Length: 302
Ligand code: HMG
Ligand code: MG
Image (cartoon, rainbow, N blue to C red; front, side, top):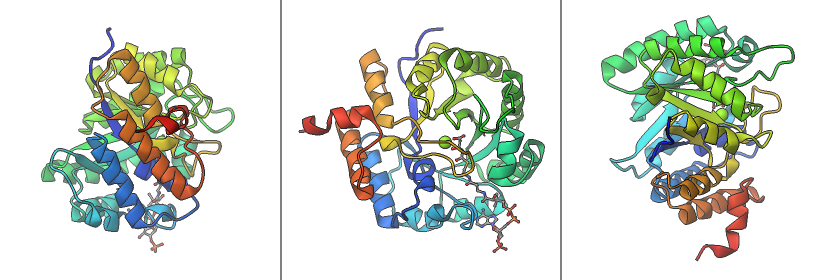
């Protein structure tokens, strides 16, 4: 399998990234973040989630953010939805796309959405049926695809493939494999992708890796070598997951784009504009971006 010549980056900073921040981010800042990312060339972007505000307070203003955005026709604005209530919010906000999510870890699923893997798939059935009837595309993500945050729980590649196949059969156009706690290594990454690609087309496989152990870029390279062309990443390395102990940021979009640029793989994203955006949101929080590339390029942006 050769490395794809172009990839689709799905930018998750405004949702997966910000959901974990304690400091509440005003919706105007979220809107500016999203618009800057789009201006940098991002064409698929997660803008928020319609989940319980008691569970994830930072996402409570997703409807406001969607309403305030100046939207472009060539950009997909996506939201995460856990159930029909979330789906209704997504439709009311005119989201272009929705995202459903399950996990390869039973324990994580209980903590994250208060139900088993099997129940989560049942719970999503009405959402996928309604979205199909309305012509709204949906992608699905599988958390803990490369490892569980809970001691003693093993995640077998076959278990990931089983959930991936079920979500694909429910009509998801993409199955994004999440390394929620960033424990994966390149060999493990290849084994899991191989198991998943045995049951669904490789074109439908996406990767969503966190950089907790500094392995994310190596794992992305491993995924690219397997022919994966759908990469999730988060500007400034924002993020984590409130229900996965030890989860730190998603891999930074700047680091991924720098690597892709160096390999001649087209992402459509302007690295300098992206790095400026990483500094914009990091300045809001009063700390530097987690991204090595954003820090290295800071003085070289003009
Ligand atoms: P529950 O408590 O089991 O559900 O939560 P419930 O149906 O009993 O509802 C409880 C309350 O929530 C009710 O309100 C509902 O109305 C309300 P109350 O009567 O108590 O005032 N509610 C909602 N409010 C707004 N929007 C909704 C909604 N649904 C119910 N959609 C539930 C179940 C799924 C709602 C809850 O567990 C939840 O919201 N969880 C969110 C979890 C979440 O967002 N996690 C982060 C996303 S996953 C992730 O980040 C991983 C990923 O990035 C990949 C990776 O890195 O691995 C995707
Ligand atoms: Mg994540």
